[in-house]
Amino acid sequence: MEIKHAFLYLSLLLGFSLLHGYSAYAAGTHDGSEQWGYVEVRPKAHMFWWLYRSPHRVRDPSTPWPILLWLQGGPGGSGVGFGNFLEIGPLDGNLKPRKLTWLRKADLLFVDSPVATGFSFVEDKSLVVKTDEEAATDLTTLLKKLFNGNEKLQKSPLYIFSESYGGKFAVTLAVSALKAIEAGELKLQLGGVALGDGWISPEDFVFSWGSLLKDLSRIDRKTLKSSNSFALKIQQQLAEGSYKNATSTLNHLQDFILNNSNNVDFYNFLLDAGNDPVVGGRGSRGIALMEKYTGYLSTKKHSPASQRVLPSLMNGRIKKKLKIIPKKVKWVGQSRLVFRAMTGDYMKPRIKEVDHLLAKGINVTIYNGQLDLICSTKGAEAWVDKLKWDGLRKFLNLKRNPLYCGRDKTTTKGFVRSYRNLAFYWILGAGHFVPVDQPCVSLEMVGTITGSPSHS
Image 1 (cartoon, rainbow, N blue to C red):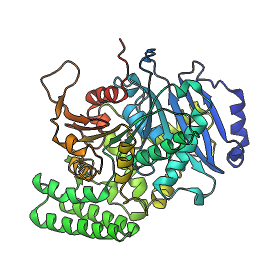
Image 2 (image 1 turned 180 degrees about the vertical axis):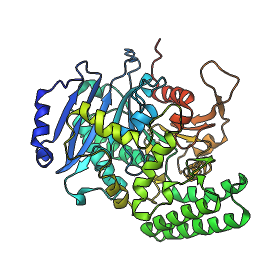
Image 3 (image 1 turned 90 degrees about the vertical axis):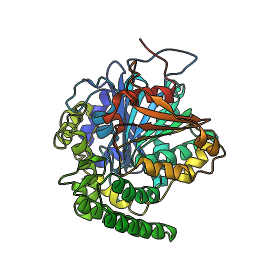
Image 4 (image 1 turned 135 degrees about the vertical axis):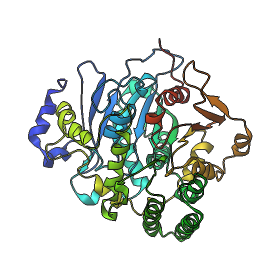
């Protein structure tokens, strides 16, 4: 497709070194159904975004059509790549229409965050963020550039959806954005936050792994004891503020579990990981995690792209379509930098941020795949129990409601419990990648969260 704005062709001629001269660029399709661009969130730090307008949009003045911002995990996973083409976007990894795309319920905004992720890039390696808060500040800057001058966007509530480590990004962004909204610096309606298998409290997850795998007959009693010893060491290191050491111990625990479970898949405990890249060297662990994303997702009928096909697609046909990606920028070319830079923040919990959002009246939804190990439902329930929110006791005592898919009421797909501005979804038969494993019930969940008007 051609680009509407002719000046963008000049960006290809200007090249990498001069891109920082632009604070923001945008391009898109002729019909306005897609827009994308770069925002220079800091000097020489460029964040890429891609917005899809839903063809299912319902014009209902009483219920504004929502925008869903998707934040990938990792840290260093590309939402523009993984979330878009392998999970919820309009096209799959073979560029075929995705039947149950989340575009049915909302406009979709994908962002490669933090900078140096996916098509985002930095001109100086020192500009890579080291904390969740720094990533949130950059994202807030991007939202200001996109929303403050656009009244159409301002009319649509923004829902921040996330997966895995993206959950930490989501709650820190929501806190940052809310502060900017209250200060009059950001013109945005914050509809809510949704945490999909979110890495909110690493301590609670590592304590869940051993007992969960023992109950599943995947490890024995001796391995359970050793696993709990690792978890206790991590707990102590976190209490001391030794976050980098805790990350190192986490890596050793993961390796130990893999070696003593015959390579259980951390993303779905019913599967074998085989030659799991996560076992690779410490220095490559960040990129290995991203390779594991595509490796796992390629086994799913809804996401046929393999880990070799996706980079080829992104650096080939997609880069050619977008036109504004500098020639020297390769998709995930700098992503290794992100994971390494955030080693000191990786194990920090973000429960306080969730409490802050709940106290402010922001809608918070937690959804978890039944078969996930790394961000297990057991671990998620444990950190929810630690919330200081005044509605927690009532929430925990409420009965769960069953979930089904469409008109089929014969097969239970999950459960949900909600009270005031907190909701928890238990998604059955899903691993770490809920939209891939259970696309139908996931889509219905999105409609409920965002309050999307029904369409014919």
